Length: 144
Image (cartoon, rainbow, N blue to C red; front, side, top):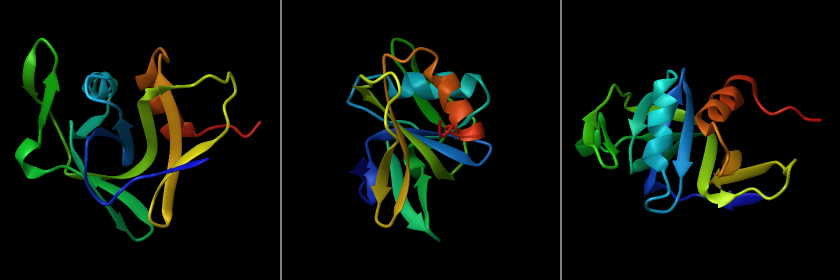
């Protein structure tokens, strides 16, 4: 199953685990920044919060941060915090936190930008989703 992304500015957040980017998609108020902050708490670095710029380079989807929000993350009921960040990352995973998975063992899903695609997880209501993201980009999904 494939969904599609668009080139350019996207309403999403993005973090990087050692060169492997995780694009966090979702409706406004769905928890994109909260998931990004949870990932940061286990070693990720922020790429962009709330908006990222998507491009394709040498067969990979690249997420970059718009300069006006670099190093900033919005935390509900706290405010905007400064954050360690990097300018861009090669995406390895997308998580849509507005979509709930219904299958216990779901099919492999992908999201595409031009000729490139990356795995997609429906993440609503998955506990410890930040740990799932880290494990996925570190070791991948088993084909069983």
